[in-house]
Length: 239
Image 1: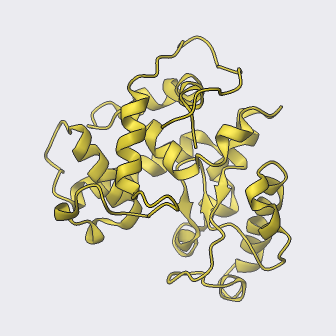
Image 2: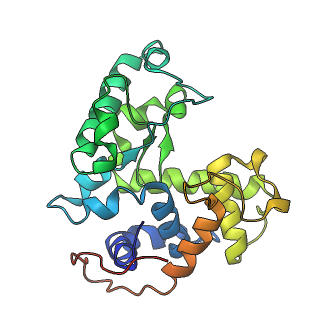
């Protein structure tokens, strides 16, 4: 679980790229911090405390090896059966093995030869999109924060429009969380009546929307030095 110190590191490291990109949108640095915490918060908070460059940290922000997918690719065979799928599997497999060297929770699954990562980038982009955007994966654009950010904002804008907020120039915290939910499940699966209790459900029972709202609230309390990158280990847990 990302901590306040993790959020501070994220803001200090990436605010100079995020804030200009958010101009003219209703999105906030706190939303993007919350999104990074929710999407890959089991990865980068550990990696940032290793002797790794920011570029390498971003390259290793991969994850999701859960079976039982209902979307492409549902197996190694299905991936390799697609154009350039064998090349993609090699990248996806290597990404899992290299990430697992630093993330203990993935070491067991990394030993299984047919396992590979489905999510890529600090804001996570699912491999199902390999069919239409192969270059994002094959060229490892997910290892470049600018690419990750542009991609995430494109999806957020689509989610915003898809749930009826296209003409709203400002969004309150609940509305921002709603956009994040649509980012996760797709606008067509978002239900206003369900409030924050929708989207991916964590093992602790909390829904994606609830986690995003919680991370945003905590992020608002996190100040940072715009001229420095924090390297001290995280000590304060998010509750």
